[in-house]
Image 1 (cartoon, helix red, strand yellow):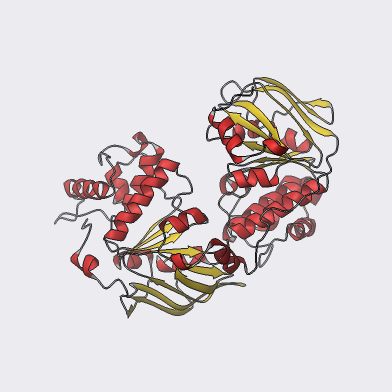
Image 2 (cartoon, helix red, strand yellow):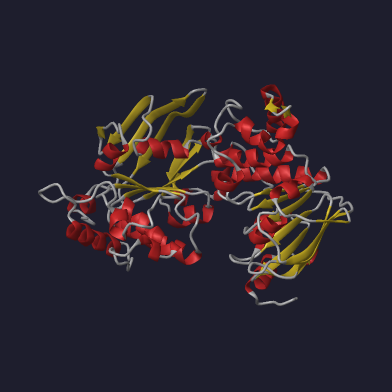
Length: 511
């Protein structure tokens, strides 16, 4: 790989290397992009900002040749170009680092990096020494000390991510797209990614950086472009804008109050957990939950919060402990037991655990409630649509049709589908595990508002979150976990960011 070329280092960085001009992309019933504009400059990071459904992912797919626009022009170095396939985009020097890149554990690092475009000998065979040599060059270029001959399965998560980045950089790209690249990274790995971005910027690469995290945007970006509802709203230098202005551009309104104000009226105790213990995940967990309450669970990675919630929902089996609902002891050995006792669970990974994304909206919503939409063993389509309409209206879902597959929805709307699916079972207790992870600020506000409404209607809510503002802004009480145990229960004046972190990190020890 030629890490830096004379052309890239000496090019005029005041002229855009890539331009989208009036690009429109239409799907059946949906205009995903409407005459949008975008300019990427060499040696600069452009942050593409917008709510879920704003058109960011569609732009990425247009730039990488997965989609072809219905209207508008793409200019590369001032000349019109058409990306008919992903390969033509790659050949033109466009590469993407996605949030989730498919890698293969049984192949070597070098094979993963050059999968589909391995160097060939004069006889058309894979040139293995050249592939390893170029892999070393790429890995060294991003500061990754990884042996290209080892099997991918032998690497840890952080190094696998570096392999995914190396794969994207295995073409001599002039444009690098980073789509939510830090979503699954630790703090240290994020810092290393920032260093990589600085290296690419110094090499003259034009970088399109997509993130929901404003801290990242203001830390790494030189310029910004805002999309809303598939339309171009504005762009400029990041140094000339503040967060309030960007939020207003994103959502079309001021968000003066991120979290809804609540006048909580807590009811009777509905859930009691005593000495709940799993042989490997958590121990001696005891807490209670009242009707109309939002109970927050906070902790660092590995604290055991999600594992506890999955046990309460019957996904994992217990070692010991007692659960009472409305004062009566219940045995939860499966999700079916949990649902029948009024407990539902909105998981952190909505794509893999919360929804069947290649099924339409109405089937996802009615899946746990087939007993209500069936008669004599046959599903009644009219009843399915009736039930789905009721709950999509309740959550204010925005989709062209209930026949739309969930995979075609934005992250925020996918989260709404998972919530609607469980609300249709008419639960007493809803567990929400990282309910706003990976969704934009506007969708977050909608989810927060809806959670508050559910609590106001008497539903009991357990919210697991790693976001301190969310925990503080939404919770009546907060339980802090560390290494599989409850270390503190905080209310009112004790609910402070520093207090949460101190207990979660083991600096304070209450229990």
